[in-house]
Image (cartoon, rainbow, N blue to C red):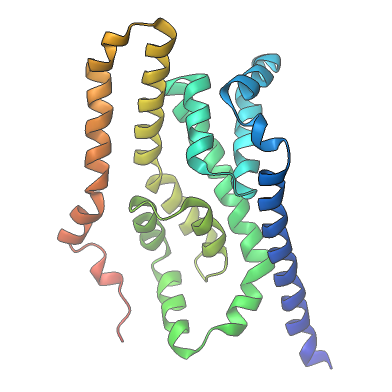
Amino acid sequence: MQTDKPQKTALVKAAILVAFVVAAILVVRLTPLQDFLSVEKLGGFLQSSGMWAPLVFILIYAAGVCLFVPGTLLTALGAAIFGAYWGFVYVWVGAMLGAAGAFLIGRYLGREFAASLIGERLRKYDDAIAANGFATVLYLRLVYFPFTALNFGMGLTKVGFKDYLWGTGLGILVGTFIFTFFIGTLKEIWVSGLWWQLFSWKVFFSLGLLVFSLYIPKIISKLKIWQKYKVAD
């Protein structure tokens, strides 16, 4: 009977993880929380928080990531409310906290069950991910793998938390800066009413960065950085 206890525990944890994911999605989609995530309402709430507004936003961002709120929405809100530069800082910190939280939830609740389902062939990939955790996470972040899915998914693998955190931190820097810079610039133009600034160097610079970021996966492939981490058949 004792040999079955770890399997039962793993199954219960996995069931809790599934229930958490379903509940999180329903909370976001079927409650007033979705209406709260707007520049007007969230901005007004943060304004009432005074000097604590950045910290409150960071915590909201982190919680939103764990509740499957789209990262692009949260990032856009951060840039629109705080501007291009401070928005980038607060968004990056919030994203890192949220990514860490989602990873730990996936690791604690789902890893044991996932490990019990892994066959011999899949175990080789799991071991390879663990051995090259930083490179794996960094690559997937750079190719814009769905943010929340990767957070929870990596928790189910053997990758170390430290490798995951470093890979995420570096991997989301470029995309986060590009998006917040672009949205923040548009916000400045909207507030000022100087629409001719849509043709300013800031707008073209952010668009140029966006185009460049789309070619990062191809650049990595050409440099053959990723190939050495592939698992042999």
